[in-house]
Length: 473
Ligand code: NAD
Image (spheres, rainbow, N blue to C red):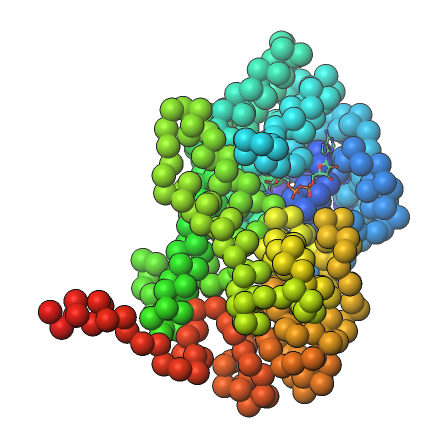
């Protein structure tokens, strides 16, 4: 049963030894998902090797440097390395003898058609297939389109016709910024396989969660689809409230109150009802596109999800126009301070971040952009070199005609407004995350433009004549 995790497994012990529930696990890909999964599985007591083909990443990890920003990750890595449960390698040979191998490599959108680019997954499978033990469980944690598990199985069978290797889908639902908690306290664990032995091994791997989270045992294709359906639903929910925010601005409502008013209905739920500048990150946008492409491949059209993706893309690109509107229609020659570059708080990930689209849009319109982010500036520099990167929010506000809050980092909620006002050329804040109170901003002598909160409008919103006529008959 459960044993002291501090006692590390010997490196070359036999797989699945009788009476010992700890496993030897290898994780291919030490990025946001692979590294977090690997360290959490090590923390469960398993003996984990995280393998990444990026040698500099592995060397950094071996030196104790964490290549991504994720709260709590450094301490957890350090503790598990110290206890001998976690190791890093650049060579796939290090997976030899593993009871289970998790694939956690990237599946970005393929350039041009939006299909998931599965080349990293298939390359990894081809690479590791000859090295897998006879009865290894090969687990796909990467988000992959329906049917990918079948193709992985075909590749493995071709190279290892006599081995009893099972291919399982175990999609990951962690969120950057709260990844460790999400992994250790998941809402559910989805295990997609019809193979009873594979189910038993996965249940052993996730044994510490057995009483804490529901286990959803389904077929492999269903598991693959669950991940995409979850992300498409979340994208739909956010896009919905964003649309309501736009309507609030027209009709004179407050989207924060609308969200609360509907979110208290248990059928709707309060989460994921925050209006914002559009959905970013490395998952929701590209997974929506991949789901649409999957449906196309089967001769189907997902009209709702297609609309959600299109609406979301348009929204990200509309934010520069919103800033321009707040400045009277144009930003040419103006200086704009931008607070936040990452797609959400508590990560350094700027992939598909709305801030990137916002800044590119402002620069295209002729603005000079100064920006600050607590963790995302190094990544942002790769796609946006022509930005003045600053070392604080106040430095980003220096001489700015408008200051845009683009990411909801905690430190942006407690700014010294007097200091900001003194730094800026004029006191205008465009808050794309609705993190400030309208009255508070008025008292601080700021002009404050937020999303879907037209209660702030100086002039009450007038009802259009035809609407009045329709109401009064
Ligand atoms: P990532 O880009 O951060 O990490 C991928 C890592 O895999 C990189 O370090 C890369 O060097 C490595 N890699 C690629 N090919 C390899 C190979 N053949 N051998 C060894 N290493 C290899 O990606 P990520 O954000 O961790 O996402 C991984 C997968 O998980 C994706 O499918 C993603 O959609 C999914 N996912 C991501 C999140 C998230 O929040 N980031 C959440 C849930 C699911």
